[in-house]
Image (cartoon, rainbow, N blue to C red; front, side):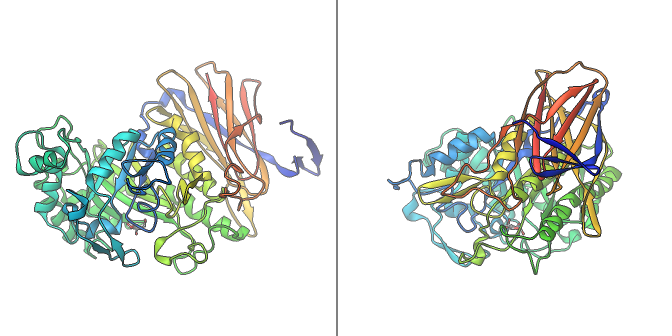
Length: 515
Ligand code: AHR
């Protein structure tokens, strides 16, 4: 693409959009690069909610219309492999604290039919259970993260789940697993002790939950596996720093490996606005909420640093994403929403925040993987679409397990009426092959913005750039036009006078490769 640049009273026009006269300046601090970006920051979340599992990931092994492997759609398996999903959380969410895992193992015809209390009171036939989930994770190369039931379950039930999936020798639970067709344990590492204990997980106080947590954690043995269990305490809602304080203060360090945080970019819980067809003001409000993740992580980090300056306990953002009104004529309890370029920008800025805080944030799980909230895949009978968010997660997967390069940023602003937000979001990393990747998002929906990137240290050549962008912030893929938005080659970056100059189109996400 050749850029047509016209000077216009302090502004420039690039292919029709204005270019702000100012530039952001980024300094890559190679000398300070030491922390690895845990690949699990690129994790996902699948709940028994709406059509995430049933008629989403899972269509049943008797389905002859949609090619599947043990009931899981082959097209979704292929797409998730390309995405390099590192970790997948299941079975909830709120559903987790109503889920009794024994209902979902053994011959399907013997499994009880239960009611999904939180999500529309629909019938749950338990046909997708522990084996189905763990085998799916194996197939896509993801680590499973099981969310245990600490709200309506028992300590025994969760400890037996651990034994069932991880027991190696002879024991009641591992024998049962073998009888159900799986000889070798799955060696599940990640376990959550309940979900949103302050809300749908039991409406507990932090002080009460921390006691419950210790009781559960005590009996979660790791059954002689080489992997140690990684136990995650149900964490704070947004800016509830007191919750994190109590977890860190009251739970001994040898009983906890991670504490979670849930935060959704919602404009207003009573007026969330449409997922597509939103106004510029709604776009601004969503991105402002997304950028708040920086403040929240810094706030929880400060509390954690007080009790754990060595940073041995991880902050696990196991639910994040945009949350809007459901699509018209869909079940309001199913949380099905469209996914637009707004979500791509939201994902780009959020992942940059996680990368930059990787010394404490070691896992994050986008809510949710298919057909629910900010999904990477939407399904409609035989068809699927990959959303703009899918493409950002795929472009950014180059950061997985690379060493984060700290950045200093002199920002410029996206102005909306009397309000403004930072326009540029950036993070960078160097992988094991010494390849540097820089991911940048321009939040401004109207103005192209220039970013000048400098560094001292390695001599680097620009190898390639990829961009996700469309003409409108509300643009999205559809079943009739599934490839409207997909990554393209980016030609707006050049090295000039020892500086990398990048011109980002409005509302765009770019990943650059330098070698
Ligand atoms: O992701 C949807 C719901 O949001 C989850 O079930 C719950 O944990 C959160 O409140």
